[in-house]
Image (cartoon, rainbow, N blue to C red; front, side, top):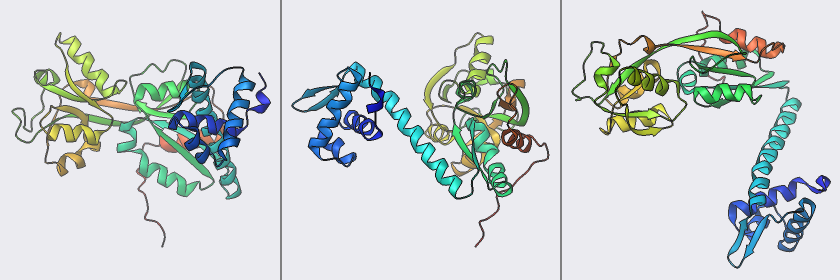
Length: 307
C-alpha cells in the first residue's frame, strides 16, 4: 500500500463521492475537472489495493472498503482543519488550545460565563468546548480526545483525577394544569405512573431515574428521548409526558413555556458535578484552567463586549 499517494485532495474527493454519490458533484466540491477527479480516484484505489466505489449508471456506491476509508478520511480531514486553525491562531497570538468536554448540565448552568471570564484573563488560550452526555464525556477523556472533562457524578472515574466543580438540583417538570402540579416536594416514585420525556442514553439524570424506578420495582415509562433541555420542555408543554431536569438550567425555559415544576425529596436529586483530568496530568495550562473552574467563590459573569 503506497501511503505516500494519499494526498488530501484525493481524500476529500473520496469523501465527497460517498456523500453525494456522484463523481461530477464530488469533482465540483474538490475543485477538480471531471477527468482529473476520475484519474485521482483510480490512483487512490490503486494505491490502496481496494475498490472504494461501485460504479453504476446512477452514480457511485461505497464498497465496504470505501466506507472504512471514508470514516477515517473524515477524521483525517477534520484533524487537518484543526491543525490549520491552530496554526492560524498561533499567528494571531493564541498560544494553545485546550480541549474541554462537558455535559449538558455543566454547559447550560455554569460554564459559559466562566469560559468567557477565563478568555478575558488568558487571551492566549483557546478553550475548545464539546458537549456530550456524562458517560461519553468521561469516555472522551479516557480516550485522549479531551484534556479536561466536566460532568455529573455517576460514571466510573477510576484512575482519573477528579475535583468538585459545582452542585445542582433536579426538579420534576410538568404541564401547568397537570394533576401533580403543586409547590411541595414529592418523591420521584409518586410520578412513576406518568409517561416520561428524557435525554438520550448516557445522560446521568436518566440513569438516576432508571435506578430509582428499578429500586421501587416499577417501570420507567420512557415515551420520548431527545438531545436538549429545551426539547424536553417542548415535549412536556405539548402534554406528551413529564420530565426531570436541572432546576437552574430549566427555570428560564419553564417560565417561558408556562410549565409547572416541583422539588423532589429524593437524595439523588441533589447532584455533584466534577472536573476530571487524566492521571498525573502536569500541563501547566490545563492545571490553570482546572484551578480556575473549581474555585468555590467563582461567580464569573460574562462582560459585554467593548465598543
